[in-house]
Length: 284
Image 1 (spheres, rainbow, N blue to C red):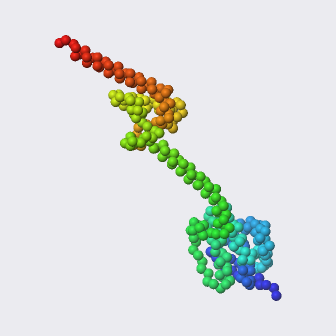
Image 2: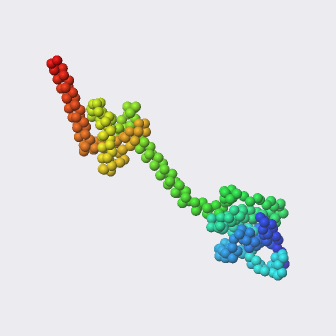
């Protein structure tokens, strides 16, 4: 006795799916063309892919049968219901038009269940269209694995970016950390005024000398390629200089500026002293 070729129509998401009932239910045959067209895909391209697939090709059944409303029998390509999900998950949703993606995912996750429910006599609940992001989160199996594989380069790039940001943050923090004049802590960066005090420069004219020396050392750092030896204090807004580079600058030009300043102020002091002495000894 030959098996039945009577077609059954099953409503799914506004499309008429076509199937032939078999026992057990998993052996029921499902026509591929209505599903392909329901997803908005090209039928000939999908048929060629199924016929070339090493797992699906042996299970494809070409059956001549007359669909309701047709005037004569025609050949239709069928797959067993228990192979339907396998075929659907071979469709990569990242390679289709964006407007088709949600519909395809809905077929991948619900179509086989709807057919099983129909043949098993269970009530079929037609789901409302879901949000695409929610569908992507629900997708499992092959589709999820493919998406994860394609996102791996993005994950690696994000990890590298995070590491670079951490390094940059540490670098900026080090650049901002300078000498705090309110704390008795010596750091690698100091303001010029502290350096002059260390060289026993007297208070008279010391602030003006500090400004001239700061400008001179900043220019020296630019000329010699040591721009990283200059920072700005967060507390005072003053320029800070690395102590190693200060030593180099003092050797080349800084000590000469300090000596000149000390000599000038020594002469002014001597002149003032001599002038005061003469005024005291001048006869009235």
